[in-house]
Amino acid sequence: MTSVVVVGSVNLDAVTVCERFPHPGETVAGLSVAFGQGGKGANQARSAARSGAPTAFIGAVGDDDAAETVLNSLAGAEVDVSRVARVSGSTGFANVTVDGAGENHIVVVPGANAEVAVGEASRRAIAEADVLLLQLEIPLDAVLDAARAAREAGTVVLLNPSPVRALPDELVGLLDAVVVNRDEEKALADVVARVPHVITTLGGDGARATGPGGTVEAPGFAVDVVDTTGAGDAFAGALAAHWDLPPAERLRRANAAGALTATAAGAAAAPTAAEVDAFLAAQENTR
Image (cartoon, rainbow, N blue to C red; front, side, top):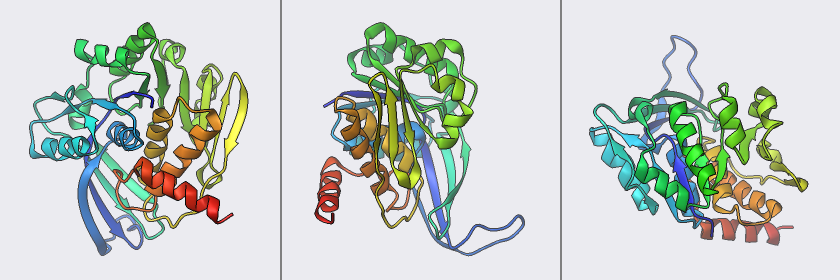
């Protein structure tokens, strides 16, 4: 199994479910509220670990009670959190509102995520891993430092460029692969054209991977959607965990992880490898 290091963000999520989103100035009744671990980096690390990959997370939390909540959650998913920095101030926070169709609105307060840095211990962990998985909810300097360390060690550099921003040429030159959705692929067309491997998520239509060996596609799965929050992160984490598989099988398992995540509330709902196995077996039996 591929070993993975994720450098990225971690948040305490407050997830509120309601029948529909309020209009500006309107108050609507909510159906439920729950608190748990979120953040794109932490979500992806959880997914990689639950997919069976030895996974370490590098990020930063504050000196508040939320720090223990999110770190205990990650550790419970067998993610190595020994290199997560403790900084003065608040842990990142996200206010997530989910409507009856499973769509979401999210407001993020970065908090400690704005202070993520890649030190010597983190560089060693990156050098020892098979895949480095990155996103853009932390300072770009930290993303660059991590990518440089990976390139020096021969570690695969996989970037999920979300939220979308302009990327420096140096970073683009360090990438082995990007994971984008349709909108990100269009917004970053120049970047996508310069990266060896491009994996595009296609919503219910599945995913597509384009690389030196050509293009392969894997179909999506029909599921009862509860909450789409974190489904893309589950896809990215599972993809990194299965990087050693042929592209079509890699996509198939990542699609299944994303689909199953959407059937549960909250960003930290990534399935285990056993759950993915059972889901895929059930899909085969219904054909």
